[in-house]
Length: 132
Image (cartoon, rainbow, N blue to C red; front, top):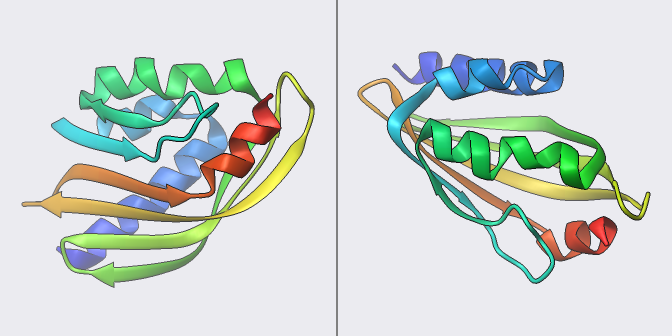
């Protein structure tokens, strides 16, 4: 099942690059937990639950805060029921026009072939400063 998980994760980045959020949401388990680091001034942080919560509390807010935003995977680690992606975020804050580029690590957890958890590690302080 591991290669299937890696293939799914790769397809999620492709979908995000196309702006195809419904495909991303459709891959989620109904009880998925989406954990984004919190930082002062970073509006998308927090724990979001379920595809609908993630859609309304995360994906729908991206256009409100970013002129541009890209998640660029650079290295994928296959760990069975866990897939780790190292890469970077590139973007530009909507209010400030300030560009940013920060490293990111994403951890995807699967159980019985279902995507059940997403954990992000990134420099939310740099992103928050670009959003001001």
